Length: 630
Image 1: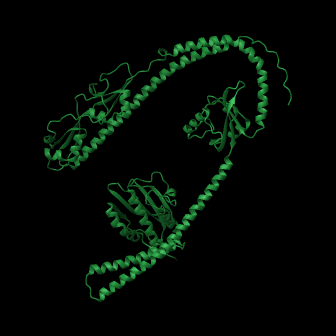
Image 2: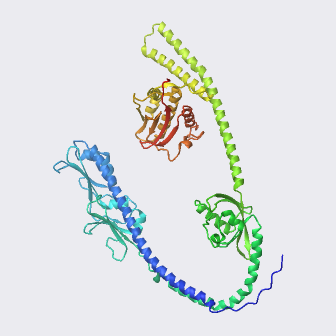
Image 3: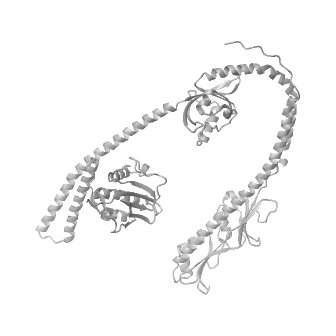
């Protein structure tokens, strides 16, 4: 280390450089005044644009409300009996609910516009049923009508004020005076001041065809003050006065700055040399979080040049695009002295988009007088270490999942082996009882048919158990030529009573013209049973609940689809749905779709999930078409 050379003698400032702060302050005040004037004009334009957008939004809500009510009137007209009177009309549930909700009266007219029925006889104005207080009804009513099947029409009257109570949000009611007016500007209903205003922002939009010759008018309740009527001019004058006073002392301070500049540059050079020799990134920030210093290692770490980082306030350019709120909270915690003493880990992004895992240690930055002036952080790249840990974690999870699958296969195989014996016994007992009854001359055909069905079902169950056991022991599926319609019929026959009990309608759309497939009918039957059960579970709470099975040829394969009108996939892909042990049911094991996927892939097919035409989910799979060997 060599000694620093003596500092040159300080020289007095030349020219009028000391006056630059005052000149810049004057320029800043002038620019600020121009900007404030422009900002007021821009705010006025934005306020008008916001007013127009709010008016269009409210017009949409009004049209939606009227559309919903028109739909109820149309459904009421379609369900109206041919013979109607006042008592019958009032006894209809839709009419009673409408009168309790929003309607003033309901009138049925014949083809000659004569009144057939009318409720109530004297139409009372409905009581307010909405928290949107302050809506002036205006004493005007509107009506909706719908034609009847036998001629004539039904007319429903309602108050426009009720429309505003239903459609007007509270936040719009606080910002604007809202009025419904006719084409001549006459007041119909509204909230706030019913009189039109000429000194506030206002916009009018037509609500046709929802309401004929009706306009929706919004008027802003408040108009912002111009900047020159606020406290800014006195503050700007005080700023200029303080700047002038500070300029007077600048000449004296410049002499001291000249004496210390050389010493400061020498110190910076020594510090830079030491930092450049380190491999740990260093970052300095002031008490406001502004970046005041970065080392070369830090710049190499994040991929940004020093001039791109110095003086920056959060959010930093190396922060990931998501999670800014969490990182800002941690940044404020660190500035308040709450950084962990043993460091903390976080994720950054290099300038080229590469993710970066870092460990950060924060320490107070103290000046020569012992006062804290900021924070110094040392940053260590731990990306490779984290990748190694993640690979190890995934390997452990994969091994655990494979172990669970192996154990499940062993349990299922043992269970199939144990069930095969009682099923064989049931088949034998049934056949023996049947032969005994036939030899004894028992003639009740229903009992004999039930015993034959018991034996057939037990044999079918034994066959299913044998196929599943063979599949779980990794034997190839027993593929043969089969018709998908017959397989689906056997599967749905087992589920039909359960579906009828749950109120689920099952539709089969499998024509006889569909080609045969090359598949194991027992395994494919179990796949269909599982998919139909899942679809029925998804339609719980839906009325009417519907499950549809269809099929179509796609190239050299037949695609079988199971649709429902339930809640849908909710963005879940087939990989997540068929993952082992993944389930959305409280009593589910999470293996149904996983086994279905394995069965389909064993047939060289694919299981897929997509939104269905019934509004719910569509789960489909493909099977190869049967080709006669030449």
